Length: 115
Image 1 (cartoon, rainbow, N blue to C red):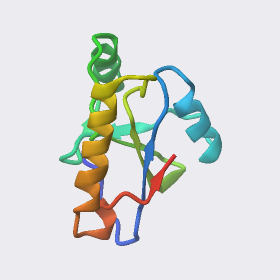
Image 2: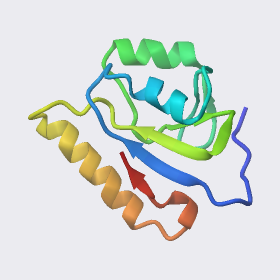
Image 3: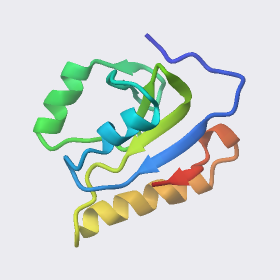
């Protein structure tokens, strides 16, 4: 299943915080839902949450994945993969993601919010 392209402008947000800090819970409140988000890879293909959970247990995480709630399809969230204090590797990944988004020519792919 692929995410359908909308004609409306989406709001792209990078959510930064340490692992297991409750970032998804906060986003559920903002989006007024208790549902889990749907996750899509960079090609727009939906990722099975069971596969995603197994990857996270192994310490794998892809900041490029898009997280969306059915209640607010105009908000596209990217999870920072757990930004730990003093973690230079995580900082460099976030910096590279922000730099990449800033070079995008399509407004839909530009980063609008860092939270």
